[in-house]
Amino acid sequence: MQFIEVTGLAGVRSAVIRFERPGTGLAFRLFPMVHLGEAAFYREVAARLRRSCDLVVAEGIGEGSAGADALVASYRRLDGHERLGLVVQDIDFDSLGLPVVCPDMSGAQFQDGFRRLPLKERALVATVVPAMTAGMRLLGTRRWLARHLALDDLMSEGEEAVADFWPGLDDLVLRRRDRLLVDTLTGFDRAYAGRTDAFTVAVVYGAGHMRAVSEALAALGYHAADAEWITVFTVE
Image (cartoon, rainbow, N blue to C red; front, side):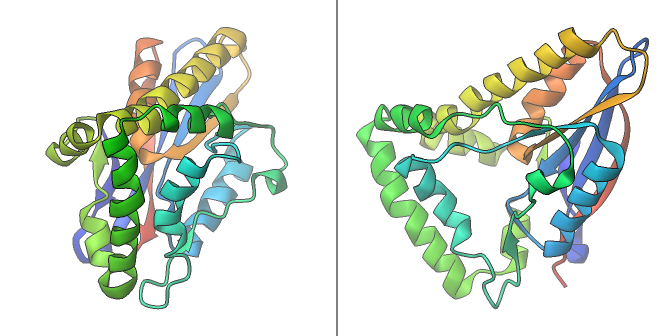
């Protein structure tokens, strides 16, 4: 299953996927997010949330973690950069008029996990991430970003290399947060699966988390009923 697709000169697009299960009105609509894109992408996601969803499960580590701030800075420093013309994800969930649930780590939880990382990995965050960001500001292009964004339900060689390069950080940023998210979605299934009226739960999380979400929903008996593409950013 493809979550983020690179479409040649057209650029990058995200698949909005609806999961359904026979016998229940409960459905899940997955919005795989890229945290740096065209403003029109985030406006379109917000419009679809208002139009077709009843509750939003949103990503967002709490405040108070220097480690999380260092990682977020890797794309926040590119916000509005003149050459790229892209913005950081800016959906105002409070303005949607929908209930919003955030099962993500608190800032204290993330920082505690960050402190426990091997010194090598913390040092890499302090050196490699700023260097990559500076390089993107000086020389980066949308085409370079696009080449690094394709995600599907199978781990690519690039993703395996990242996991091998800093396994502790990969576990902290992805795996542990996946478990919190999946536990929340499983709880919604237990609480609402018996209803017969239509009720759609939106999952608005980084695309890297969607593999775990789709696997968990499949294990609960849900299947991908339909998918639509939204352009994240164009290349040409």
